[in-house]
Length: 153
Image (tube, rainbow, N blue to C red; front, side, top):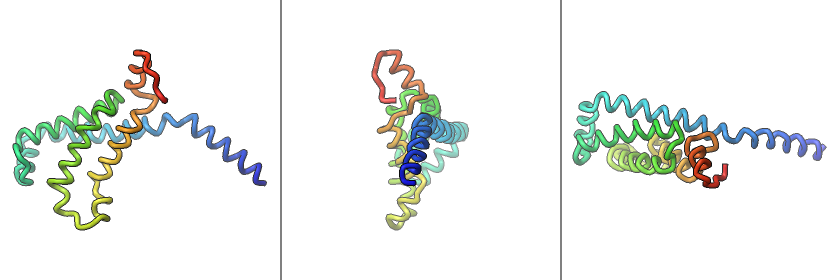
């Protein structure tokens, strides 16, 4: 019985391994679209977004709001394409750290609140993309192969 279970589990793991490219692709597309969409909304209502930055006491609110909005828009698009994925996660992480530090942290009382904060979860997803990369189905992987750079995918 043990050998039968091991054989079935091994076969299932082989199937899942063959489809391992799908996870990063789906997360990249959905997460990237989320940021593209929020960035577009903020760019289209930059005056209102700037007013929120002023209310939060963020320095240079007009510049900071525009930078944040365009970072989300361009970052979301590049993430969806899987282009410059690792590079684009850096400003996105910075954007989230600023949000947590200057906006969200005033509403957080303890570790549980921080762990449950959306911006912390977003930061972790960006960190994962920074470390793991965009996955096999991405423009980054295609460009790397075209340039003769060996990838792990």
